[in-house]
Image (cartoon, rainbow, N blue to C red; front, side, top):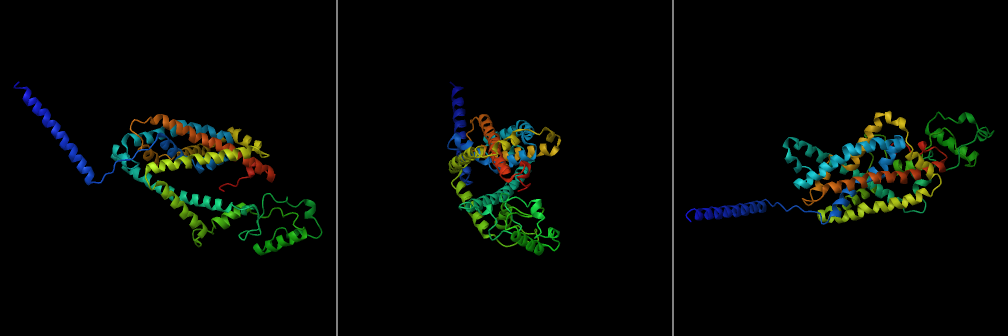
Amino acid sequence: MGETVPLKRENGEKAEMDAVDADVDAAVDKSNNIPERETWSGKLDFLFSCIGYSIGLGNVWRFPYLCYKNGGGAFLIPYLLTLFCAGIPMFFLEVSLGQYLSVGGLGVWKISPIFKGVGYAAAIIAAWLNIYYIVIMAWALFYLYNSFTSILPWSHCNNHWNTIQCRSEYDQPLCSAEEMNMSSYNSSSLYPQNGYDALTSLVFSVNETFNRTCTLPNANFTSPVTEFWERHAIRMTAGLDHPGGINWPLALTLLIAWVVCYFCIWKGVRWTGKVTWFTALFPYVLLFILLIRGITLPGARNGIAYYVIPKIEKLSDSTVWIEAVTQIFFSYGLALGAQVALGSYNQYHNNVYKDCLIIACVNSGTSMFSGFVIFSILGFMAEQQGKAIDDVVATGK
């Protein structure tokens, strides 16, 4: 009995000390105003948030363009190799680190303080990406607004911003050899040497002579689509030394884009998770509509064949492999801290391995699916313009 009493007293003192420590920790947290970290309201919120973050223009247009540029189906070989060797492992690493530590892209580097600078660098890069990417969203809103017309402004050359060099790819064919040799036309004036004014008078005289039945070959014509973007939407200048004025329509759409972005996140992660139900699913509705329409157009089969038939000789070009790696990192948003932050709102025991595999399959599957949508339309455009598919898309536009 003499030994039992001190033991009970010792256990009681230990319990009291633990209670005091808990009260002190709670008081410190309260005094520092450290809020309790939110979690996703449901498992699908996390999945849709990652899908909505990863899937965008990089999947819908950049991936098909890289296939178009780098040998069609041959591009899929370095793309898939990079996906399985680097993309999925790094994606799983970032999401699982965030879930394990329940911190974002900056705090996660407390696990190895020597790499803290990586977190700050990623945050800066993400900030720059957000600033330039939302400008692209402003362009998309401007394009959407201008599409609500019965006659699309980029389908013709009768707008106030068009130049005399404007000519639609779907207009009448170029002048034939017989028409070029007509006696009423001086062929020596085909190639004016006096600049813009000479070309202006030449085009008007030719249109008057041939009653607008054909246009001159070898002249520097531009597409109405190009002029819509360069002269009306973006209003490109000669260079950085000519900044130009404020483009008020684009400034308005940029403001709208920032306001929408704010209201997507203003109530925290639970509200954002619900918003992504729309932002992640609605693009698939549009893609299915475009695919059904695209495959019913004449020439779609040629476009899809161009997409799926590989040009193996392209694999000897190192640029193809570099662009495949770049596409994986760009599409999955790796090394930016965003995936770490999204994973940090998961429950600790969430099956993150399964989630990452689902997201990876959806992400890359969307890229490949978008290729069928885009190339079916490119095949139609090539047939309507009487061109090869290689000549339909201008590089960088």
